[in-house]
Length: 211
Image (cartoon, rainbow, N blue to C red; front, side, top):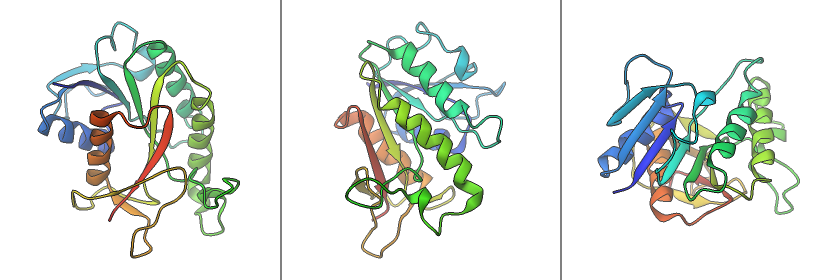
């Protein structure tokens, strides 16, 4: 049985990942900021991501980082929370899987242009995309952690259907046969749990899109 922990577990993506993992027979421990366990995890601890220690995360096969921040003053925490988790897991066999962003996906083979730099990218999301991209840049420097960064498609739908199918991509924005970049939280969760099970992309960024 896989034993995983989910940090920042109260968010909607985190809860989808937890539900998917529990339904597959995983033993899931959730760390969140709510007083009550609003997830399907078998174990829940009220604990801020910055307060997680090596002892808290010891013995897990994988840790999922589902942290999210949207306000100007909290956006830098995408980098600082991820750095904290990397420091805690440094040198261990516990894998770290990060719920990433789509804005940093490349749109050319040379990997010099990103989605967030495109003319159609909404201005309102540029600060978030920049903050998440900066965190990924720092993550790429960590050779002491078994990390995997998973970017969703451009249209990341909270209430989209669970189709059970997805296309696995890499560093570049991948479109489906309809020319769409879209995925639901539920299908993203399937991809996340599949990656936890397979462990095929250590120290890599991958991406997912609906079939």
